[in-house]
Image (cartoon, rainbow, N blue to C red):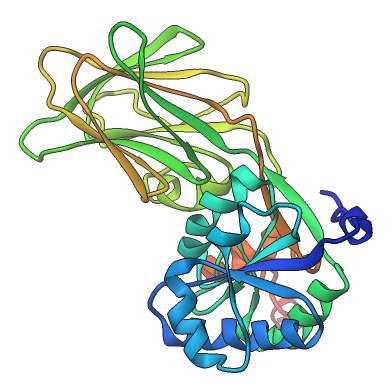
Length: 320
């Protein structure tokens, strides 16, 4: 965990800026984003928004000139972008990661609904959000990200993406199972007939991997988690792997249908039999901004409504 880099404030000719990204459809998310942008504008901080959200936010802010993020990108010397503020749930944060990760700008999530693991605070905390973003009163967590590649049988790269939560290789049709050989560090582990195989980060261990029977991993852990999905096998247990491991998933050329590869449930690619999916640690880490110390344990208990009243009897019961 680190503090934000404050050196940008001293860079001559560069304006302080934050990126604002909202849930794509929810009016309350646009309302919250507009309130935040108005407060930033009053303090002389520029807010950059995506081209697709200019209309929704512009109609709520008639007196403010919004700057499109796509127009700001070619002008890196104009803006000192400090943080990406995301109004929505964890799904919206995963969408924001597609810009945040390559630019290495930390993301700060404002939750608008159910408790999220990536979102930092609630809609009612707007005053604190504005104050702490303005004063840069936040710390930054760095999270492990997966690098995902699809190779043909000659080893040529056909597709590449990243995964913040997980990648899932799933069967494309219900009529047959996938026949997949899983290898770790180029050594075979097991060949499964299954609905698919999932490889998760610690960040994603509370998402799809959790539903598939995988363990919860604390997000500051560096590790990978491999979970077979509905495998027809006696040994089909989740496996926790080294963060330096290389995982290969080979769809066998005979006896298997094609599969579909999904990264974070957002980016997909059709994988035919005979091709390989290779997963390694990504060269970059996802940066998550935190406004306060909110332990993962507390978020876990709240998200899953875990019973924590304790097992001890009351003093009256003990005396009887």
